[in-house]
Image (cartoon, rainbow over all chains, first blue to last red; front, side):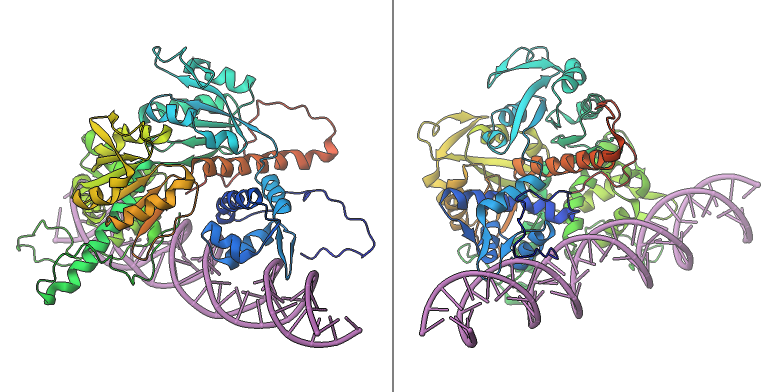
Length: 256
Length: 256
DNA sequence: CGCGATTTGTGCGTGTCTTCACAAGCGCTT
DNA sequence: AAGCGCTTGTGAAGACACGCACAAATCGCG
């Protein structure tokens, strides 16, 4: 950082005042660093080197250092990063210093699981309301929350200051749910339904599609199979041998 | 493609013989195209333009055309793409012409939901076995499948020719599960546990972390809040007004 | 007090991905 | 049969991301 400070001047321990402009790829990795840092903190480590942290997060150490440098990080050359300080910095940048309220729409198969998922609560999110369109499910209590009818969605979202909406409905219902979330003032949506949502400018949508992940893996399976099959055209009958895992494939480990 | 064919010669309806080398970014989008195409086919459409398909998949039309051109696609200028043909092409490239067997490890909260998720079966995958380490859960029947103990994982994976392993266990158990999957010959893993897996070369891992998605959204919420707050420093007391959704933010809609 | 070991922060070359813009090709109409 | 409108496929440029490699900075030790 180009932030010189006269040796005697008192340093304010305040977090960075303005939010730096982070590359999207960096933002996507910060939560991973944060998770690794919390693990370290629980084990009593006070400092960590970029090499170590990068290993724990599964990335290149140069990439990690560049990511951290973007948020004006306070590492110490020759020593490493202060774990507690880095946790604070990342949590501040990610906006995790305030607990955000989440509305979950669709308490079917997947929605039920999400409603009970610990990872949300332990990482700064509070599931504040559950919704479903099925009258049979409305009224059901899950984890201490009563499922409300989706007609109340917009009103409740406004009242409860919902920051993030999670859509776990069938695809056919997803767009209407999204519209209601937006009408209720929600500007961030996590969509598990297999469809594309149309939202106004200023609303962020992230999509998670479990089947797509499997299909991507399927492609790589297919590719691996054709790679080991085709070169063997001239090699007659090399038996299947499922034991040798065909090593020496130099570029594996698919990122997100 | 540069594959001229004399007007009278019979065209073999065979798929592309060798698997083209696709950019990873393209592979990640193909399943999305495929879903949109299936929707079109169900509605009776026979052809589709790149513009239309791109809209349905939420991408730029030039990107879509380049993606499809990579797999030597057979579009017709002035007309568009043949829906049925394109479906076949993409399914072939993704390796979906053969149904792949999936092993699901960890039938807790999330695992239960995944075991019952329709999207797997309807898109070419068969959940062939369930596993858990908890003796209480072993023996339970879910969707017609009996949960087996994780000690049997390697053996069953080999016997049943499992192609893909899905890990839905706590983070602490994930690495050991991955090791057993690899020992059983599995070379593709979908990891829902919040941790980094170490696997040999030739094994592909994709990670899905629900909490990370929320944290990324949280960052954008934070950024939006600070963008609308900071410029108002000189503007005294502009009230909260939760109604105006702060439009005119030209670059939204976050990709994966 | 100085030196060497260590680790951060970053400039720069490289490769990938995205997007624009347009030529080439196809079918329909006249 | 010729022309016209429409759509694909792709060359090229720009934007972005990655990773190497090294200078700068800090600590500990002699």
